[in-house]
Length: 406
Image (tube, rainbow, N blue to C red; front, side, top):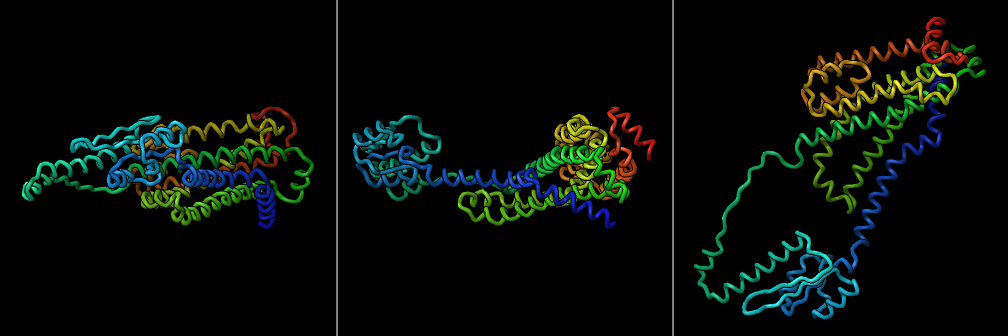
């Protein structure tokens, strides 16, 4: 056990200290902070005077009402001429002239582009409210008549669900789960295979195997790699938790978190469930398979070819889960959720989209665990026969030789 721990610690230390691992871990956080930084700068400095609309009216009361947004609308220009000059110099993007002719409000907009739907709607509502007041004054109606005219229809709504639908939450949870699996597997399967291939045929490995069994060395390598992946996920978990606490307090993201807080909580609960066990077990079994592929080649530059079968299996699980999507009750999905390797993609889909019995989940996990331990023991017995081969006889012949040596 001590020998396995030594190999585990050495593998872990070497990979965690590498620049590739550090950049891989921090790159998502850098991207998120840059995105929020640009969003903050845009919200702070992006609103310039050239994006404003000027209100020109001799009626100061109406002009103030029309300035419903102080950032988008300005009352700086008091005449049509000054507003026209400002538009020519691109200090504003347009101006709205409001005049009253015979108890009727007339508004005319001049600008470089049309008013947005929201802006046009807001202006019309304000103008219509003032026009209604003018109409009442001119008609000289009694209080009873005013009340009758002011009577409005009633629109009632009965909403059974609030916020984002459960189906949307399930889709988001499923998408994050399978993309996380795909990202980790594509990244680390190639890394593990290259690491194993780089050690093959060296004198150092002969010295190592003279002092400890190759099987224990292999277990140490796999456990060390898994520790690296676990560290990677733990950093994301801690970083995600920190952002979950900090971002709701920032001005740029406060509104979004207030609106989608319930949805975010449900998505997180779906991720931090038994689905995480499937992710971890899937990573382990694919890592072992990638190590086998890396040990089958003689030159490290051939690793990409040797690891292709692993990538194909990953793609089958990833693409298959995307194709079937929300159809979790499909027969193919049910069968695939019990097949080792791809069950890590399909069973989380069933857990998110449908009700799966504990017996089915337990059976799927036991099959996946048995396959993982069985593959680890099998590759461990082959490892010395694979790693010490230096003849370039091809992947299949290398495997046959190692099978005879064990």
